[in-house]
Length: 586
Image (cartoon, rainbow, N blue to C red; front, side, top):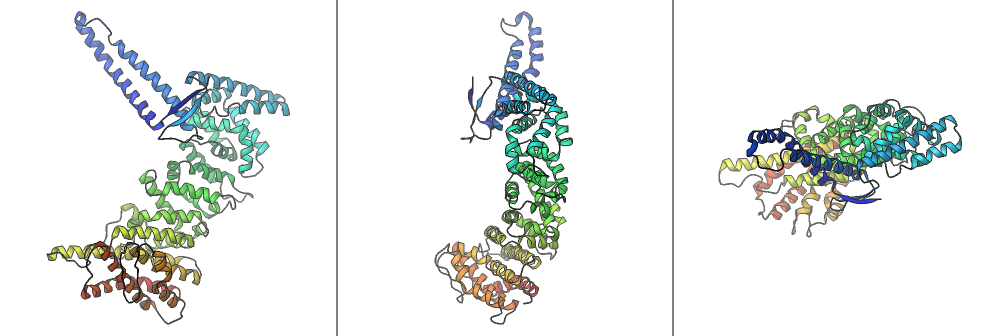
């Protein structure tokens, strides 16, 4: 009789742990209780003795095993949508023992059908093999059933059946295409799911694991990844081996890597561990792999895996950071840049999430000029300004990277909040004013360093003059977008910056005189060098800072403060822009 069950897996796991702890405490307590009862002798009142702890322990052990079996199964059911943490499933068997017995019988039937086929490889006997294999559909998410099935079937038959199905369905020389795997999956999916269920439960025989990782052809190994959600350990081990065969000169699409990307997209922890390995990251992210499956959706699948693993707050913070170390290092090498060429969903993901490490990159960048700032974490010391420039150069090859970089830059500037407080100090004591000035100067240096990083990356990017000019215009108007989004009321400064309604940032960037001035200089419609452009930019930044101060409710700055502010902005912008324009012959 089918039993309908609903379980909150997370809550169940906590209860399983609690029951195990309680049973262990009972076992520890029993000898002391038994000794105390014996010592008390006739003074011990009639009734249960230490044996009651034995009964409690047996109950807890049995309940723990049953709940573990049910939880393991329901965690593997993929076609249910959790509601408030609750997942539901239908259980074909009343307990784990009944389930394992049924799996054992199924394994024996499968093995018998396989032996009959080996004796007489007729179509009829093959159809019998297919029939018993397909009986496991929907049942092999159950680890107990699957344990019985795989134990009875045996390692040799498991591999031989994969080989036989492969011979009938795998038409591509480098693994199953999605269409072929769908057909093969009718026979192999129950076995692949059984393998995954038993492995996830920690009960996979070593001989079967060794065969899957050492003896199965790589196409069959990849099929295990494509047909079922495998354990993290198996994904990592199989993935490392598959990548050793990737990017070879054998003709045809490397579908094996496609199935690895699918497996990684389903497991954030596996992706982070994979990328945190220098060797694995280099093999996975090289251009011949990233670009090797055109028109298959592979890049989007890989980008999904990266997006889930590299986003702020994703998975383990240390593994995420170590993954980023390897990614920055790899894509600072121009030989890896083709993997980021437009249109690149991988580059888009990297541009979207790199902003979480802007502070560390800025501190590392500022180290070369000995500007103030926090000391960069020791791990970041492996990078220098050249590597950072080259990494952003790789990203900026793709115009689609501009918007996410712009958004990240905006969030960074909002956190800096240049308009908060007086830039040159208005505290009652000189010591306090000095502290205010140092804080503001450090903010300006940090925002300027990020601009320097972007422009240096642009200098390295392999773009045409027209493409470069478009990026320059966007980069130069970054700060205005951010300040304008915070501004309220009307701010006018020499006709350069005007905004009466907050939020119309697109109108400002698209229509204001600043953009026209920048484009005029870059197009050489009127003479101009870096200094001309800086004058325009400084005017705009001063006005934008005034808008930010106004949003905070502060009064306008005096003339002397404005002159100092202009000098400070000019000193930070002029070298950056001069380098950018010199690089394009301006």
